[in-house]
Image (cartoon, rainbow, N blue to C red; front, side, top):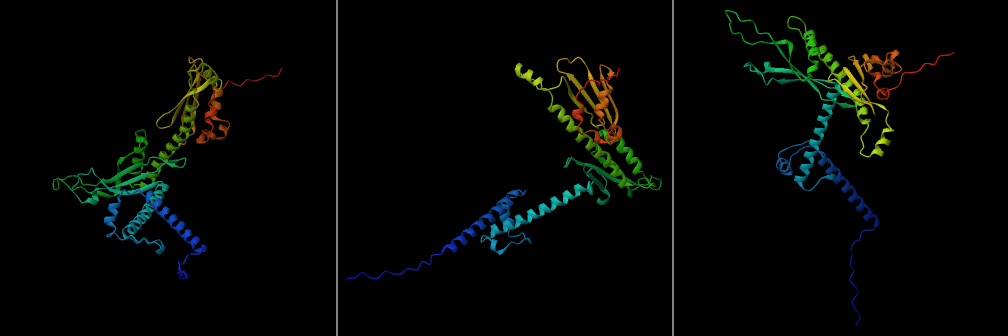
Length: 350
């Protein structure tokens, strides 16, 4: 008896091009998943997954994604949409803040928390000014000025012994600030000059710009001279317990080296000190007085109470006659010019 014929099976096996297409789709989906994971991890939100699941049904967002990227899980899809909207909002807020900071000045209004007035809340508003400073491409700590309306309350009279407080609608006074204490005098001078009481006219714009002017110059002086200070301390001789290593180390440093570089808080005075490797008894000092623009206003170098004129010229640099010391142009390369040198010898022809 012959065996029955084999039953035919149609497995509909895909050919090679369909497998490659499937692999490409898997690769694309993996890339999409990685992109979403990176976006979610970069968010600064501290909301938990449970919070988003609870709020996803009630929150509405205008953000949409391609149908090819839709996820069958509705909750997860809503979470991705919400996260994407938050990421976009965070980026817009960051961009707006960066633009404000680049402008250097920002004006805003807040309610004075220290006010005890019982009048309307609008009279308790104070004007805030944010002043930005920047050096070497980095923002420093901003400064704040807070100004409140001038008190235009009329004087008591027999008919009105307790007049109602009346804040001025045109004049301001300096209320609070975060300016360093060593700038208190110039700040008060500018306030007296540009924010006089009525009936004189005030100039708030000029007041704020002049305050920012000396704050920016102070920040630039400190930033540039701090680089020199770092160089000084990075090149101090390092003590070594090994005598041989110590002797080799001393061969790499000058006999007289810069031992200290001191800046006053206002960065208007610099003190430099030198020491001899083997003899600390000789005193060498320099005092550099600076202008507001960072130029040299005065310079004295002394060794045992005697002025060392050639070191004074050396510190000023070769271009001091051309006005290089009138601004901060003399500061680059200062550390190299601080290296102690002997006075130049003059040869006389017979």
